[in-house]
Length: 267
Image 1 (cartoon, rainbow, N blue to C red):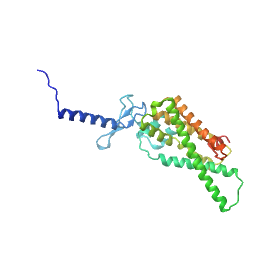
Image 2: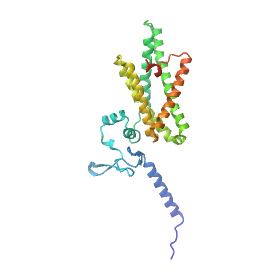
Image 3: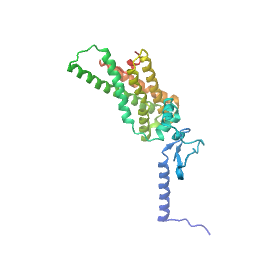
Image 4: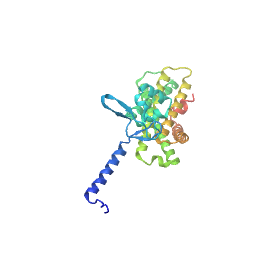
């Protein structure tokens, strides 16, 4: 006797249930293995009495995320050393929602440094209210210019990726994730304030090193987020620098004293 094939609403319900189960399983793969960048459904499994066991990656047979047992200070040190595993842990396996606040604070630090350089170059010592208000508006102007240059840098990175490897940004999720990664990896600009407070003869050298560190962090963030080669990530950072320098040259041709990174880090 042949086996009869089930048909009707029960079969449709079963297929719909399997599709929903597959969609749920794919949606639950929101984590990444920090070693091989493969998707994972969980980082650890919680047994009874608070016993935790780290999940082993099915691809590389290593712990999916060893940093969940590490102290945040150790994770920060590894991130400063630009380790790809630490970047994957921060970008994929943690819920950090300080991208906007961190970006604004970094821009404030950069605007303050430019404003300070501008005040040092001026000879106005008149405490008149008009002069004080003019200095205040200079700070707002520096903040706006720093924001435009940062925007140009990010646009240059996205444009370079679109020209070199257009398939990487086809999904909206990749675009948003890369933008968040670039904002987080610009945390090195916070070091501008200590470099100015503890002013020393080596301050220009410190500013150059901070610039190199920020660009290195951005490059590592692009490489980890999109899982591309180091050469390609460096090319994207270079395209961002080209567009940012073009914006700076445009401002300088208009006669604006922008005190940009190009002039600050070369003094």
